[in-house]
Length: 381
Image 1 (tube, rainbow, N blue to C red):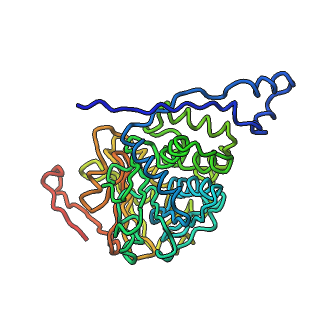
Image 2: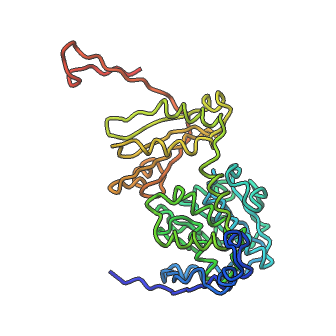
Image 3: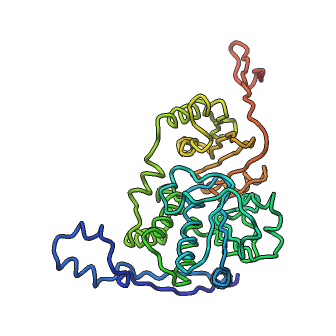
């Protein structure tokens, strides 16, 4: 097996003065403050695989040559899709670029506090841009715009594809894809370091937002030592960890709790050891919610002891049925499972979507008196 080459990039937070003010709130003496000024906050070495470095160089060149840039997040954007979009956009605007953030679906409420999250557009004119960028799109279909704008993938203009999903097939003309990364925000972080572009407080918050979301609050198995070091740096740069954590995992309105209650009420474990539940449009109407409010409930389904993995089926407002899959086990690759229905993602978190509606089926079994289940008659209604 060919050895992988790495580019060594080091950095020193002592150069980032003024030091974030919130740090000084926790020190009392002037000597301690002076020590903070002179002490490097981070000196760990950042490793970038050689093949990723090559794509980074291509992406940097394309971004610097372009003046008008459109950055696309995947449909139904989540914390990583929004965070990576804005974390790339803000430094480009500092460089004088005209940048538009786009997604076919609105930004979720839990990401609206990020700088310029309220400026996302849901449509754009391809002819207005010199360069197209996609972030966190594990497959071309998640870009979604290409269905009505086939010119996106014509090769006429550069298309930079930043992503970390194993299902990504390098659909861009430039592909900074790293399937070992915990999130696309981690890739954008490394790209910014590679380019030596500044990471401001706002950019640091966007990056932390995406990393925190895709690691489930830094508890999923993709939370490595490197992830913790990077998050530590981002907080040191002023990233608003408290706001990120609150918005992503600690803000749940009552109507959303009611929707989760319906999802949990329907949960069952099938004969294959899979925890299954579903939610439809009637449930959204009854609880005063929408399809975005189901997020969070799947973490409870994934906590069922002994379950191989969990599946949450849900209708959305566009006539699609989506399947969200999660597992805690290491011997199951959910990307392969989701691939059976045209989806994909990560080994422990994947999804799929298809047109249609959910139809509940009730199943019962009649057991002869004194007999076991093997002698019963299955009835499906």
